[in-house]
Length: 134
Image (tube, rainbow, N blue to C red):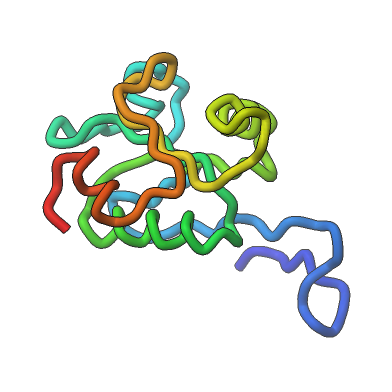
């Protein structure tokens, strides 16, 4: 069982980000799946039925949570990078938002030249970009 970062009675230590817990399913998005291959966003076992997908988000962002839950429920593999903990992911996120942090940013295709960039997409926009029915 992971150790808690909490030191206060409320359960959360101020200023210390809570780690993103592993999520079940093929779209777990945990960084353990990241192998650094830029052509697949580092998915160890990319699914040829789907394009590579990178989610640049925050654990506390409702749109990030909704998009990840949608992909998880459809079995769509993706890599999730938390912009609050990963400076490289934060820089990439800000690149698509005029220097501001807006989450999620979802990149579809090659990470260096994505075919589609979605910013705070609806489930319908995400489905259309990936080629899946809602």
